Amino acid sequence: MTDLLNVTLLGIIEGITEFLPISSTGHLLIAERWLGQRSDLFNIVIQAGAILAVCLIYRQRIVALLSSWRDPAQRDYLAKLIVAFLITAVLGLIAVKHGFQLPTQLNGVAWALIIGGFWMIAAEQIAARRPASSKVTWTVAILVGIAQMVAGLFPGTSRSGATIFIALLAGTNNRSAASEFAFLVGIPTMFAASGYELFDKYHHGQIDNVNWTAVAIGFVVSTIVAFISVKWLLHYIQTRRFTVFAVYRIIFGVLLLTLLPAAG
Image (cartoon, rainbow, N blue to C red; front, side, top):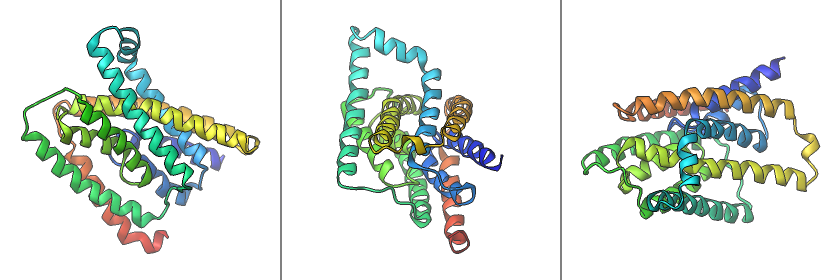
């Protein structure tokens, strides 16, 4: 019963933090210090649950992109999503081939939260000085693909934060448009990561060692909570900046560095 509660809490944390620019991986690494460490497969699959929530929210947009590809504007946008995903996928495979392991040190997470917080404040101020634009350029698509990979290498960076704010800096300075592209490109990215982990477990004969009950509960909880979280965020950013999330990151990072001796 205790383990099921812990899994549920991890699903809630993932659902809340995956699309808020505060780093889901960083929060999961911190939470697992008290709720029990989980496998990479568990963490990636519950992230895929959060991505499923985005599929539900953007279902009409996704259907339009896939069914109206003859329309030049839709085809162009879809092509940019594909390129951004492929850049992340290729860089990710290179990292895996070279034996990259996700760093789990909390001091690294803390510094990533703090630095990212100040970077978010600066990026949004710079973007606000430029003429308003909802257009996603090829430069934005390429940089978003790179940003996803950078976020994956450094827990605490935040995939959504990195992609949204690189889009804002690169020219898509409408918060809703930047968020939409960042969220949509996360769909194939996270589903591909989940599929890769499942294949890797199967290939190495470890599939029977997976606690599928825990994975399933975390997935469902993450999906439900992420759906609510993203709906709220999309409404919030219509009239407000991301400043509150940047301040949260800075305060949380400083507190984490202060408490590191006790936490470690």
